[in-house]
Amino acid sequence: MRNKVSIVGSGNVGATVAHWMASKELGDIVLIDIIEGVPQGKGLDLLEAMPIEKRDSHVLGTQDYADTANSDIVVITAGVPRKPGMSRDDLLNINHKIMKDVVGKVVQHSPHSILIVVSNPLDAMAQAAYKMSGFPRHRVVGMAGVLDSSRFRTFIAEELKVSVENVTAFVLGGHGDTMVPLPRYSTVAGIPITELMDGATIERLVQRTRDGGAEIVKYLKSGSAYYAPSAAVTEMVEAILKDKKKILPCAAYLEGEYGIKGLFVGVPVKLGAKGIEQIIEIKLTHEEQAALNRSAEAVKELVTVIGV
Image (cartoon, rainbow, N blue to C red; front, side):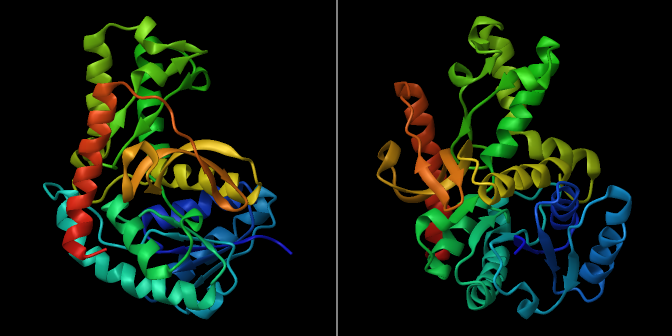
């Protein structure tokens, strides 16, 4: 029995997740969207690439949630993308309504699935999906930190002119302006970047990481990033399906960890076959903890608005 992953939303992010996943032969893929013809067309196009890629992933595009039945993982990308000048908060109410519709149908057809939430505002939408689904917290996870830390790693590698493979980086907190990149835990071949760069350079890279999504939106004029976000989702899917026990920064529902209770916030987690198998608590300085608390407060404001 092959793994089955359904992707809700066949826009740039959803379709590119399907592309990355099919190229890695992670399982059979269902693309679902409310727009008639788009998932079918993209799904068929991708399916027809499989003989060239020598991959046996089956890809199906559909409007019918019955086709998603018994998915191992459901990736939720559905929602209105951020437009230039639009804050993540502006997206809140419209994407919350979309999430209500999607999660109800997903739970009906795949009650044992693991949900990976990508829709923005990320942390609030993950919390909405968690509350609506009734799933245990280890089966609902938000994609944010993998993307944010990849951006930080990119900028570090470019600055130091080293291989991206040598660079590890950690970014905690909410996905957005209040994220908390951690230079002390970010390394090049095991050497903390605080030993390799001065404070002003690090702060410049941290700020560029915080502005990473907005920088791409500014270039594109309409639409937002999708290659890196979809690659981040695929890394999470692979860690779960292959039971890798991979430690990745993800949005998780905290119940007292880091002194935060009842909120989705980005923290390091161990991802395996059960979803979030462990929340890793690392020691933070007073300043880092204060920044994480501010990030959590920003998430709390959003979830209060939508009542989750």
